Image 1 (cartoon, rainbow, N blue to C red):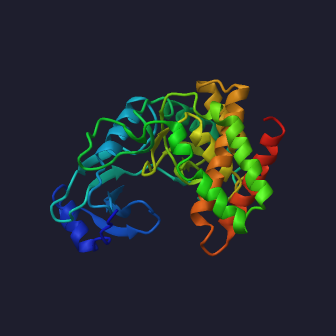
Image 2: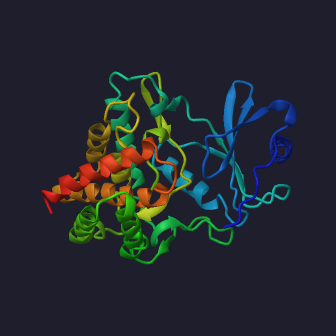
Length: 318
């Protein structure tokens, strides 16, 4: 996929000026965005975020539709003020959203009583995970796609699960896992695949962790960033969160509180709990497969530790 360079602030101001008078706002680049170019827009006391898709053939249309769907369901996500499928001056899709008050909980100092924030986030995640999707995997976001249809890239979840699984295990067994560990991982996924593929496709955030849960003054304020959304099992996001739980030392493990809130909206059975562990294991392997050739660091260590933990847990019950 061809990506265009991040536009200069002057070009962004020009694009914004079609919707806001340039005297009414100040703008600066935010470098935290990975899947999009992000600019913070300050207009008086109000803060907005201007997002631009790097891929010139991609559109925010589906993401805008998801924001509207979620807000109708009372899920606290940013309000979209406007979007363009293909801005003429930039040649890219863009959208402007209102700020979610506060900051991601991973940026906070040690929190006392953050259980309530995660509990409420879990409730909202359960609502999000009930929206139906046609197909599995990454949601199609091409400019030719119909903006109000959520369609995954794969016809079956099994096709999605095994797209890179064998290759990842082969590469990781060379310099990350012992070959016997790779065999145990394959056995666990094989034994648990029926649990993972038993659901119709549901909307998933796709990259759900503490960086996407916002709070202000100890209160939950919303969820952000649907750039990695996909159609999957309703428990994929819980598996992703569980895999990354405890990655940032300033926060105590939050998965129990998140799952408790989720369970309040959708009861989690014993099979569901096993499936969540399976997803945590599978996502950990996929992520290690993607990053293992990069300079080894803290994220690698966390993934390896979490994968080992999930494997040991599943070995006792599968």
